[in-house]
Length: 157
Length: 157
Image (cartoon, chains in turn orange, purple):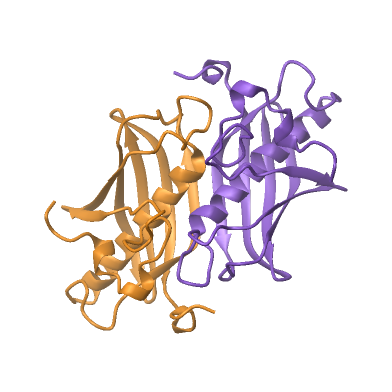
């Protein structure tokens, strides 16, 4: 994966997200790429990302689904518009709604594989299905409804 | 609020959660209490908990809904069983599913108020509605389906 990640194309002023901003030094810095028709990212939880000892904290799993979802939404938005990623004006999505089903406890320690698939692209809205695999088992399934960032949010409040 | 929080009653071995474990020094240490029929918690996001500059990261908001939900589920479980909180054996809930609607951007800087209400207690399952208030406006609404922790998860993998 030498290609830049979806998140590497975000403009600097929109790259501070705790989950996926390359300029957030304290954050998770999630990186998502295409893998055929699906998108994929990998993340190894830190020891403190515990729920019950031995398992990954559900809030982190929700965060990974969220940021992988909005990243995949951006990539899908460019694709639907027939535009190369990073072309101007930038396409950046925020989450309107997030659903996460915890199918089984997610073991803490090994890298997690976060995968996504585009379910719908319609106007400013993109729906992404995502799931998380640990030790060869799907532990989490989620869905992200992402909407293109309103211009009013572009430079903060 | 001099009463112990719901999370203060969790047994030590189940108090390492990143979101609400009192023994997780790197975590958020969320504390939830009853306020009449509702539950309430307060949390001030750290500067790094950014989404777009000026707004709170959605993954953190999902985490607050999640941990406030499972905490409220525990309190509701004791209440439904007519047992004082902390009585043995401990009641501890994990999340089966989480839904979060981001109604408007949540401003970063001031304390957030996280509120919850018990929607259903049925056997080992508790459903909690929760919402987050910032600057006197509801920014986020969510629902947590919590289930009593399976004995197999009690001491990690």
